[in-house]
Length: 305
Image 1: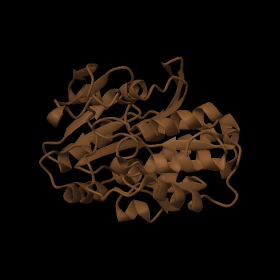
Image 2 (image 1 turned 60 degrees about the horizontal axis):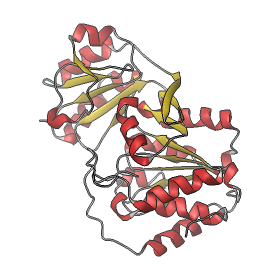
Image 3 (image 1 turned 180 degrees about the horizontal axis):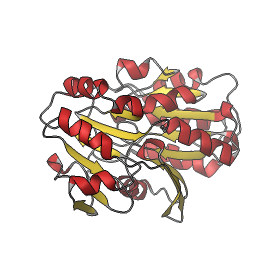
Image 4 (image 1 turned 30 degrees about the horizontal axis):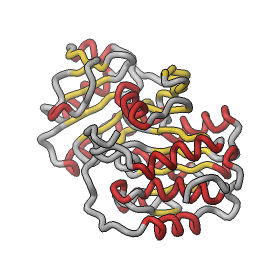
């Protein structure tokens, strides 16, 4: 898989450390009451900046995902990406059976035999927020994510929204079409200024707004986060709360990091994200998420290091 290039966050520049050292640190950080049976474990993994580098997922990440799943743990891919952006990653991971949470918790997907089925989805009609944001952020481009077609107000810079199922439509069509997520992109605006403007608008009080590592924001229905989606799935699967793990690096991961019994921030995460975590592991290019997964495998007495 690693010959394929993926549009994702760049390397953090973090100095490499021995994997065994990272593994020992993650093992020591696991809560004392963490289950020793893999069947009582749910591990939620963000994609970008967590398990995916521009070159793909590393062998250790793949070993962790498949080792846990084969042992009976629930491995959940929990991403801000729409299903159309998650699907190629699932294929590259050879993630054939399990669960994916897309659109920051708004879309729950069952993966069976490599096929994806939307089991539950929360949508909203974005009209009022589009008008407010367009007025406050001149030149912003918008994307709406109703499955199976992504609707764009204009082409995104640098082909940042991948795939072929795109349609450029009028703002009127964007405004009236129910969707689980709207993306706002202002490529020429400083990220901090973009964040400041969005935080001052009514949309930040009426919806969930997550600003990424550039001037990019995901907007979902109020009260819908990765944490709410994961809690619903945990209850559905009967996994004890004590066996929940979440690993991520972005502001959209804070809710699930706080929700989990063992919340982990990646080495590339900001200080804000790190402050909500029980443990900080290495950056994505240094197999931080893999160290956590291998530590759980060690706790549960299954294959791996």
